[in-house]
Amino acid sequence: MKHLLSLHDWTSKDIETALELAAKLKKEQKAGIPHPLLAGKTLGMIFSKSSTRTRVSFEVGMYQLGGHALFLSSNDIQLGRGETIHDTAKVLSRYVDGIMIRTYKQEDVEALAEFGSIPIINGLTDLLHPCQVLADLLTIKEHFGSLKGKKLAYVGDGNNMAHSLLYGCVKCGMDVAVATPKAYACDATVVANAIEDAKEMGVSVLITEDPKEAVKNADVIYTDTWVSMGQEDQKEEKVKLFAPYQVNEELMAQANDGAIFLHCLPAYRGMEVTEGVIDGPQSLIFDEAENRLHAQKAVMVMTMGQK
Ligand code: CP
Ligand code: NVA
Image 1 (cartoon, rainbow, N blue to C red):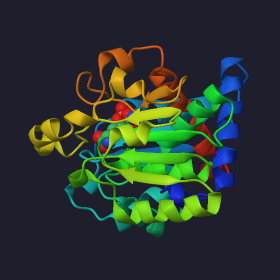
Image 2: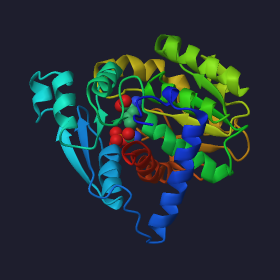
Image 3: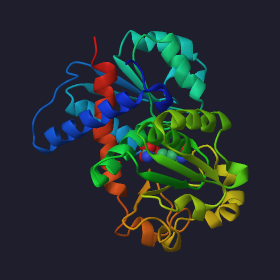
Image 4: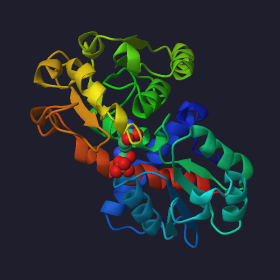
């Protein structure tokens, strides 16, 4: 496997392998057992948007694997001044062993993969956030022991998180329900692809406008900011429209007993989630954030470790 552009491109087996490797690397790291699987390799990290978790976890992960990571703000490289993705891909392929990119258009990530000759990892686009979902799946698996037969309900904006959760959870044999306002529904192609995968896996996808319907029988309740990076101008409208989609104690009470709460972070307490829920006993957000490190180390080994 060469790239991680979308979890839709990965098989169920690929995801399972990544989660198993992540768990192994996590154990080794905690036990102080060195695992320099990418010794001498360099990861270029292109960021066109802000980041705390993605930046730090990739950089630290690469260090723990014996390699080196380069932070490349798109404002500071020629890409930000109009050099093409084509030329950037060709040039960086001569220097580094893999690229992680966080940007706006999914097509730009795909173009990097097309024109470059090194593995490309999607560190978030407007459409998808696959690395986050691998960490989420690892967290759910650690908590419940397995993924098959579990149900995840996503409540909020039909954004990159909703899309990647649809792709990733279905491929792991989970049922998924997504509740969004009609005006901010998920991308139709992503939903159609996920429904197709769900049929193959024998699981269900429910798309609704009703948060209560979505969280019924759910084991995992997930939400994300209502205002994603680059959409700041939609804030005023969204805050009103999304009020019924807040994950609060009342909504959590309608999910299964023992249900957990996840959020990719950064979170806005009092908006998409109440303080009581995100800081309460059902919330696993910091284990989830930690698992970015372990899951991405597995992704880097699986993509950049082959030669
Ligand atoms: N969840 C996530 O991707 O966080 P950052 O934006 O801080 O990288
Ligand atoms: N949907 C959010 C996720 C941040 C990790 C965004 O794109 O800003």
